[in-house]
Image 1 (cartoon, helix red, strand yellow):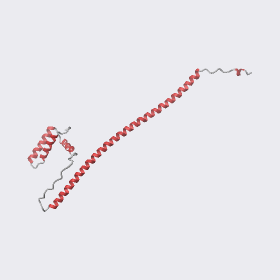
Image 2 (cartoon, one colour):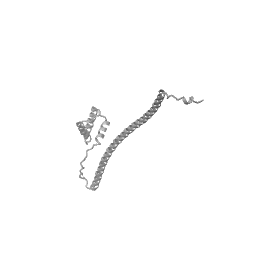
Image 3 (cartoon, one colour):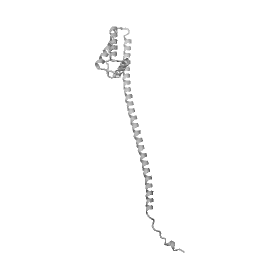
Image 4 (cartoon, one colour):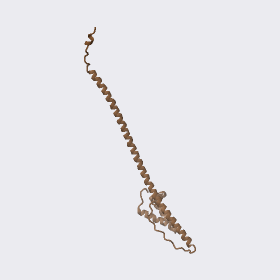
Length: 180
């Protein structure tokens, strides 16, 4: 039951379920047996059937025909019965309106959750790139410092080699010899 039902199968199932609600006990019992047989044949569990109804329930028909008022059989209870029916129809309309509001709100919550997850992912990516830039900056600073130290050491070594290879100018010893 992981894949969707065939529309013909769904139509047949709905027809059988309609027969279950019939007033005639023989038809209802045979319809129940037909449902059981189909469930066994298709390896459908009661939970899967429940999930099917739950999946169908969020998408009710957009418009429903307004119920037609029935003619009252009793004239004595006419105004009270009419008021009760009016109140029932108002409550039913309120329940339907609240149900639609709930569905819209649930859909909005889901879209906001998806947006929140996208925002969290974007934040994590930004933190990762910031960390990478920070690491690159530290490495660059370390490399610059190492180059500076190497340059100073090469300069000192170069001047030492230059002074070691270049003989000193001859000293004039004549002023030293003139004294006695």
